[in-house]
Length: 246
Image 1 (cartoon, rainbow, N blue to C red):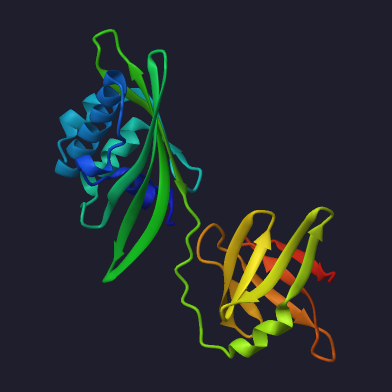
Image 2: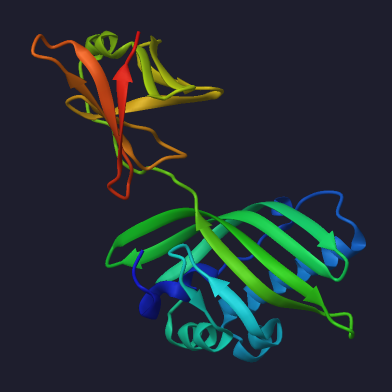
């Protein structure tokens, strides 16, 4: 993601949610605060700045997926300048609403789109909104947090799947943490505890998974070509070296 001055509040622009995306069996109060959340997003899409500002507390905290914290004034200024066709979100879903006295927390998933030239950059996100009920009975947004869901948009390369047998085995990350690599139905699989993911080929001895992790795994070989372990490279450049133990 780009930096604060041009992108921060793009993450808070939403498309309307239709009734099919709303959680069932909400209490009257839960539905009330969810309606306020949906109305705020509608105001942002229409660029109705007066209505939008009315849903947001003066000291509301905006925290984006880069960990940058912004203010209401910065958010509204960015909204005035940013065309919605450049940055918008679609398909809000998986709503969870929790009430704690006069405070409500709404968590949901959405798909964010950022347009650069003719390239649509897509991010899957979970967003958390905190609302406070006023003496008047209306709800006011006091905080919003955006987190990107690790979804890998890389495309796997064509490889000879017969080589997958070279990687089968158990790889120890540390005591009590082992990655069991296996082949099933012509695909390479990783299992750590109850987490099972497919390894997709990135080229050579390097693989990646589609969702939940943006890192990569590169298997290492000895002079005879036997696999002896692998290096897991996090997206931030840090590495974990796993030794093949079985």
